[in-house]
Image 1 (tube, one colour):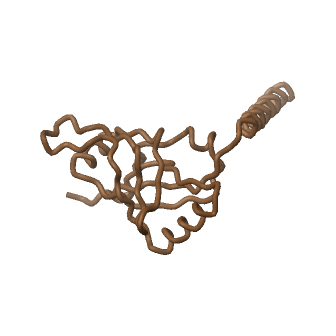
Image 2 (cartoon, one colour):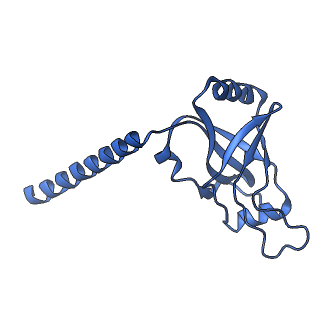
Image 3 (cartoon, helix red, strand yellow):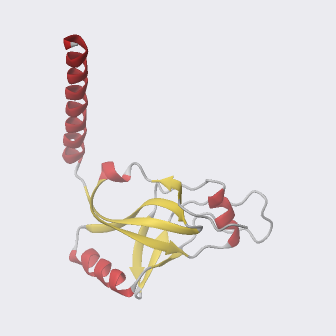
Length: 158
């Protein structure tokens, strides 16, 4: 059987970029059970309430929902269990110092398969205030309207 190549995105946290200001991103491996991998390969996961934390020099991912595998039996996993993240020691130390500094949190942006291995993209993020969210939406809407006006002007000018 040929080895898997490329990247296959399973789930993304679209709301994260709206709710948080992303400072830095990291890639981490996931320690999973067999039924979790099969459930992910079926394309089922939710990162909505997920977060990561560091405890005793180890990185953990919590509250990420990977539903039970439908074909599984008594070996099935619990959907919202803590999962260990595989990262380099230097990365963990860097994240620990940033999170303890204050204001920063670790959130998962996406879960994907890279060359057949399950990975999670973590973001070192700072929460946005309500007025920041409104400001970002206003800017996005303004750029969209400007692009629309340019398109109509180009059509009429031709």
